[in-house]
Image (cartoon, rainbow, N blue to C red; front, side, top):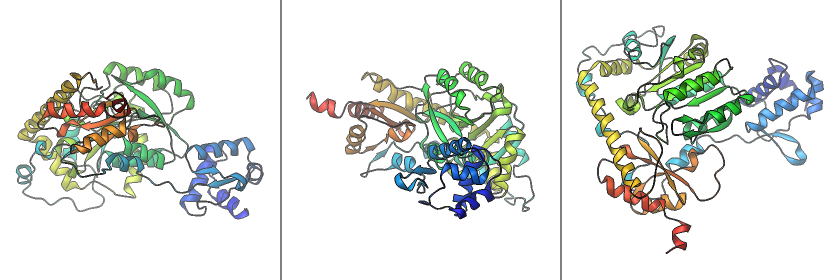
Length: 450
């Protein structure tokens, strides 16, 4: 037990609950503590570290909420088994049988992506700066990105996709036990990432025009470290936040020690105008825009803006890791953004995705099934029995995503949702809407009323 106390004492930067929680996390990361190791009793540790038992107890509560430690009966408090990341995401993409039409992925239609060959052919000199010390963001790309950025940000970074941005943000700015408010339903990879970081994830219901502000206000007493939102085409619901609600949310969060992380994953294929709380509280906002759905997932490019104070630790985390996003890929995106034919192609894709979504939504409406949201690649369909709906569609060769991995809280009962990627429904819209509606009514209710 003395060795455990010494390992914590060595890593303790501040005699506070959060400081002790971080010391335990560092000891686990350094493998000085391993899953199953017993931790000292609260009073003993408080005496050894010259801290109050209340402070140690508070640290234990932070660690328990994040899943880092647990009460283990007679053994007392022990280090919890290492969590396996990606469980929500893997459940969302799991298929039990082969399908002919996969509407579960949330990915763009390859036929609607702009062709790369014409743009690549214009890059006569593919050579790029070879120094590790060059600016990680090409000046020309920064200029193009700023043209329709939703607010005047201090600076822009370029990263390897939206999830890379979220990974960097959570790694640089969050600590185990931090409370993070997220949309409910939310994006499974984000929920996996936050849980892996040891954050206390709290869901806020998504209404027709964005987050439930009354719920946000009620949670401010818990001093959230971050609020993560998707301002346009929210995945999975397709909801876009109204400018009025964004301004009210900014007013609620102004002055709080709380970072607003905006994941604009729809990017240029969104039909609504770019929107950011940075227009009202720029010192608290990190805005991420992805170009995967519009210009191609394999470009692996997203842009991240924010105030210097928040970007500094993110830059540091990137500098000691990936370093920068390939400047060759940055040149490709710059050329795509400047190309008139590419712009027309993106406009046609935006219109086509909206058309496909509306045709399926209208088809469901004829069956009395209403879905939220107005844009994006996906719709969020209420069903009587989630498992039965997924199985029914799979038996007809159509894969959809069960809604439970998107839920922040515990799901109880069979009722739920399925996410359907309407962006991939290129034809047979009425027929597919009929099949989805039939599946939405499948399950125990159907069996009892035949």
